[in-house]
Length: 405
Ligand SMILES: *Cc1c(COP(=O)(O)O)cnc(C)c1O
Image (cartoon, rainbow, N blue to C red; front, top):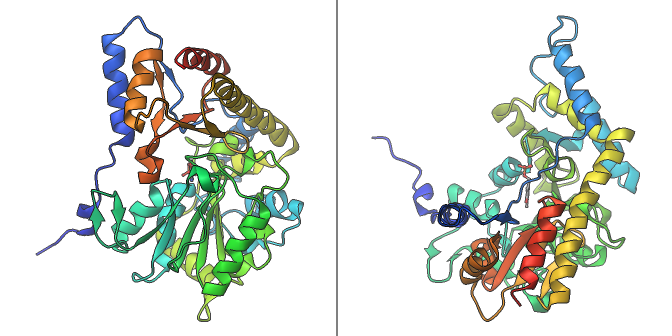
């Protein structure tokens, strides 16, 4: 008789965004006169830049002509895109990444969920707390995480690395040694980053302990400070221990277009087995490639016009981040993040927990944010605001929040 994958039954319900949405709808229905401002969205709002739209139009037309029509894309992605990535993201910053170390995909969410397939089921993962939920949930589905304790919100076989005010919201090297370490910098949800020297310590640790780092750099384009690394391969020895995930979603507004890539260096071997070869095999078997039109759009991200337009787009969001961070700090709120990431991590006021603060902010200011506790137990007492709204709404939301303190 057929049986389901029991691991799926172990997943606790993810009520975060559905509860946020439900409370927002109820509030709107009860207060039709109030203008609700959403600083909760982890999604971009600015339209796709013109240089990218031009490239998409051009490639759509190519698809309608026999001579330039394309069918299945090459397994690892078109060479024009992979070479643009190598030049634009790595060679330009002095990193030596080869074209066959780049695997083009439909985004970093699926890659971050699928990458765990390369590892044994008895491997132990370590994650920051709070964390982007995909890393843990995908390992739950695979059966790697043990049992869930609803009281602590933690899995028995997962090493949690608390990200708290005292450590600058960046994880410290864990006491127990993990096999797979998930790091995300600049971080969602806290907006925290670490310096190149700090990241080097993680790389040295992973090489010493024979662990692998899965480095999610989805927010790389938002980095503004010089000592914050754009890639883990800026660190010595990273090619021996690290996989990097990149996305076009946040740097180029591709959340609805879908494009990302994963870097697996050929030097990354475990007991003589190449993870690059394993991922190539996986890609060949399970994935038929990102669309030609979308890969041409991705290529345009690296063009001169594309770069200039995207720089402006990122600057627009980061100006919102500045408005939020500086406005709230001046008013007396305790805030972090927002300098190298489009997220501001706010301490709740008046001893409220994250959900109490959510209700308070919605009822008193008609502003929607995201409760920090939804990202993990160490997020309790915190709140995430995003810089992805419009400038006008952001300014208004912060003016309203200033009056609450
Ligand atoms: C938005 C985001 C991604 C990107 O996901 P895509 O599937 O590429 O849209 C990856 N990691 C984190 C932490 C994110 O917040």
